[in-house]
Length: 213
Ligand code: SF4
Ligand code: SF4
Image (cartoon, rainbow, N blue to C red; front, top):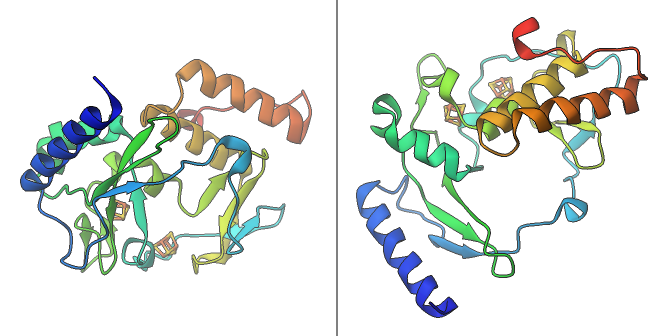
């Protein structure tokens, strides 16, 4: 099968998919985006992201802002499969499109949450699928960059309030959710955490799993 036939088949399957899952809004992005997915070393952090440093305080104010902003929630195919198979999630789950890297063939679905994610309870501002939420959601407002540092988004109003942020807890959560989204294996998760801790804190410390917190 040549690449044009493969792409045509892919587009047709996407249309079928769209018929099944209602678009989130009428103001839509193109459903198939041909974009280069950045390689590890090419990922740039936007200026709204700051490096997490000792003394940073944060608490979630439950304002729901992050679930209403014009963000694109990128999801993995593992998460897509889980959402379409889960009785509770599939009722509201929608995709707005798929991003395809023309060079590598790598792809992932996405949905837009501008104006309000379908999983957001507008009265409580809480996520109605919280334990099953997507990697992008679960790790917000933190980001583990390929430069080995943890960043936080200044777009979240919860920074500067609440308790001190424990970077180990943040790291544990990020790696746990990467594994859950099919991005890494459990072995990778522990190894990466060990290397990160050694690099940032020396060899004496121990990686704690999210369950140990
Ligand atoms: S924007 Fe920040 S404070 Fe508001 S709900 Fe999201 S994580 Fe919590
Ligand atoms: S899935 Fe949940 S956490 Fe993610 S954007 Fe929607 S309401 Fe927010």
